[in-house]
Image (cartoon, rainbow, N blue to C red; front, side):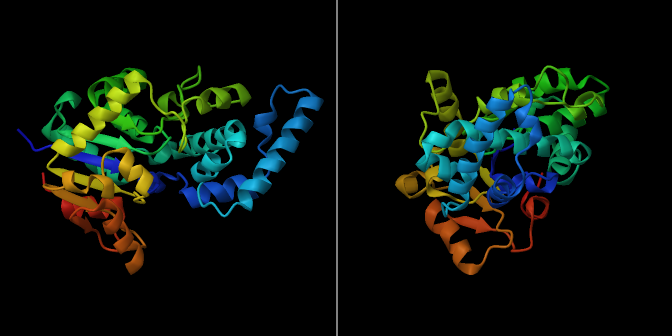
Length: 304
């Protein structure tokens, strides 16, 4: 039986597919015009009220000194609803644009290797703990599975959800809209204000009550995946201390973080930033080379 591997994903894991980092997401929200699609179906009075609220939100976020919208909304919960709406619009827009990139980079390599060794997804000895709101991981594997086996995207996506261990620590964009995603069947993907409201319901930010009983069970499952794995691979992960503690890592859990392999990308990180990753994680962390992205790290560190 193959030794289990856990992938712990941060924003950088989705960057090869065109998704923004936290810093890039802030730039998009604060420096681009209010998307007109968010005004669909509103009366003139509602539009003006929404514009006013949006402007207040953007000014506050831009001048907050917070590098991520999660941190900002944690401190300014009054902007939670409109902030999540902004997140859902930006992330979903990037998901749609990622159509042609889904079967590429590290997810393509991973699918190629594991699908060859383990044709049934339920036999894959890997789990995913992701801090990302996007659904690219699920959509990418489902797309490759559908095209490899000649089945529908919908059936493949359902199989991915049922058979693979995937946990979104802070939620994800809620269900797909009524029509198929653009990459599912080549149809157009027109989301409006209501869709983005629905999407935003699945998003939780730092400091919120993120879990009910079922959610707590999933969180504990994720912690178990990590503790029992022989190899843990962090891809595009920033080692925020709150995030590490959330999944049972970090300095408060230092004594339990022993054994096995702990490997992480460190793309573009300077010496002090690399030391920060090691301090916060409190583990024997092996950091990849400064010019290694997710794919390069996997090629260098994973032998199957």
